[in-house]
Image 1 (spheres, rainbow, N blue to C red):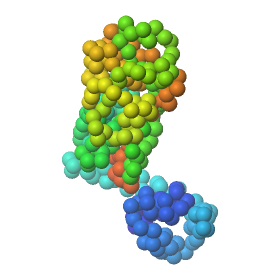
Image 2: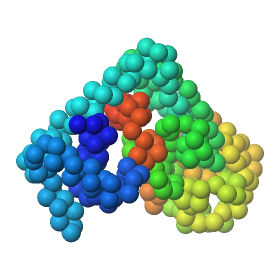
Image 3: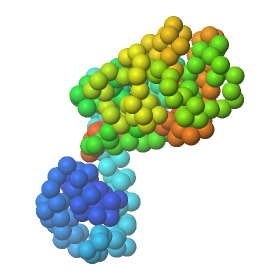
Image 4: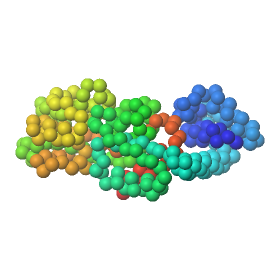
Length: 283
């Protein structure tokens, strides 16, 4: 059995649909179907029951799924050990301007323990690219915040954070315990440059086009509020200078901290990164 064929089978078994599995694998459906049929012929067992709505696993298929996952995990570990011994194992990680989050430190420590021979390259990015260079091929995986355009990307939610409005401490609205978006109408907001992901912009602008200074980094957002009385949104977890405050918003959906990578990328270093990140952010 070839590892590639086993990966094909696992994708179909997990998606329970040939079309979705083909999309996940970035191949067309006919060769995927042929590969699974050949695997069934080689093993002399029916693995999947096909129907117009998808597929279901046979008892033999369920056994193979469990064994195939173990085999593929072992193959990934072998590849990592060989790459590390050769000094060629590396992963590039994009981080969206929030490297002070304690969960990032836990993730870094755990990843180093698990992969001591891997060269970890960090790319810190500003607020204009929520995928941190992933779409441009500059990183392998990103730690960022959703929502953004997820086309051809795989996204794993690590944590959700409530969102509030950033105000100068002497702003009349700063005396409120909570606010609604409608109470912010008529104010100038910090906003992102033209061409920034529209899904990302819409979320951080509260779903409404805004007017105000253009910013690219967290520090620029804070300075816009401090100097100009501009307002904008931020997760409540973010620390702000003493002259500023963040008042919770009751009608804003929470901000999702996510790990994101290219759909279909089977690099075991990425898979391990996402699993370790999931554990680090659950604390």
